[in-house]
Every structure is written in structure tokens, then in C-alpha cells.
Image: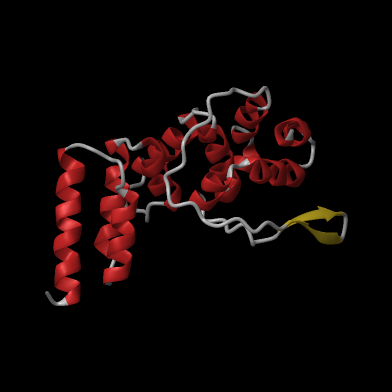
Amino acid sequence: MREELLGPLLENSSAGVAFVAAVSLLQPEFRHANGRNDNDPLYFQYESLTFPALTLSIPAPTAPPMALKRQPAFLESVRRRIGEEPSQNDPTVRYTYALLLAQYGDNSALEAELTRWEAQPSQTPPDILLVALTITRDPRYLPPLKQKIATVENEYELRQMLQWLRGVSGAEARDLRREINKSIQQASGL
């Protein structure tokens, strides 16, 4: 029902309306993966008026997000919007659309974000790449995590980095877990 009501809004000529519809279509675990708390209000803006559009209270999920099996028709609108210039210039909008596609099993926009970062790896990796690691469990997303780990200074943040690695298999992920655990021991003085 929600998809039937909100999906058509992705075609709205107002980029703001389409963005709010996209965020509203995200399942809670994908919304949380994007760092959006369900208590963070979204706002609709009409001319000079701004008013809250959505406030929910859903506990944060502990499991990694899982892709849905269905392929609603509105995904074509999302793919089209993600390629438009305003979306390309606004990371928040790009990331939201990428997560909405990933929610339905299309990781192409997440892969585009990885390619964008790989072109300038000296930049701090955006959190969407860590989210992509959690969603896809693909070791190709480990380099951004490694770069983030290099800047982490305390035990709490190191433990958070371990959470991003949940479900990722392979030697590189295993070595990274060892490295993080070793850093945690050093940070805690053990």
C-alpha cells in the first residue's frame, strides 16, 4: 500500500517531493543504514512555507538490511532521477536513491558511488560505502573501511568499525578484523 501511494510521487516535478517520497519508501533498516533516525523529521516545503511531513518511532534494527524480492515500477523513476544533475550534485539525495535501489536488489548506484570514491581515494570515504559493505557483504567495499579505520582513535569507534564487517567473508576481511581487534586491545590497554 505504501509503495502504491508514494511510488508515483517519485515522478513529481519537485525534487523535494520526490526525495521525501524516496526516504519514506525506505524500509526501517535501510533508513537506519543511511544514518537517518526515524525520529528525524522530514519537511515538505511549499513556496515559503515549511512543515513537518513524517515522524516515526521505530527501534533501530540490529540485523543488516536484506533486499526485497519485488521490483516495483517506480524503480525506473529512481534510476532516472539518480542520473539527473540536481541528484548528482547532492550526496544526500544520491545516497537515498542508491539505498532505495539497493533495497530492491539493484546495487548499481552503490557501485557508482564506489567508483566515484576510487577516482579520488584521498577523500574521506562517505559512509554510504560502509553501508554498501553491510548491504552487499562484498569485499570490494573494504578499502573505504580501511581508510576510515586509519582515522579512528578510540575503542568505541573501533568496535563500530567491526560492525560494518558483519557477514563479510574472505581473507582480507578476516585480516582486517584481526587488525581492528589488535587496535582495540591497544586502545583499552590490554
